[in-house]
Length: 73
Image (cartoon, rainbow, N blue to C red):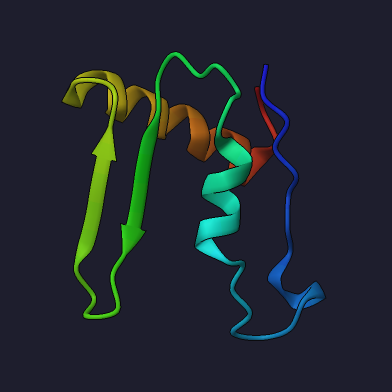
């Protein structure tokens, strides 16, 4: 089970971004069996890294979409 807190960006202001380094620090030591890190670099390039193969990563991303969009586990 994951603990995902739904965030409505209107609550923190337009254009607000959380610090990426703080988010990554908070993820350390959680004992994750599968991990995918997806980000956008300043030049607009998508950066992806993870612990699983492409298929497992896509499954994890689809599960994450359901949590983010619908609050489902």
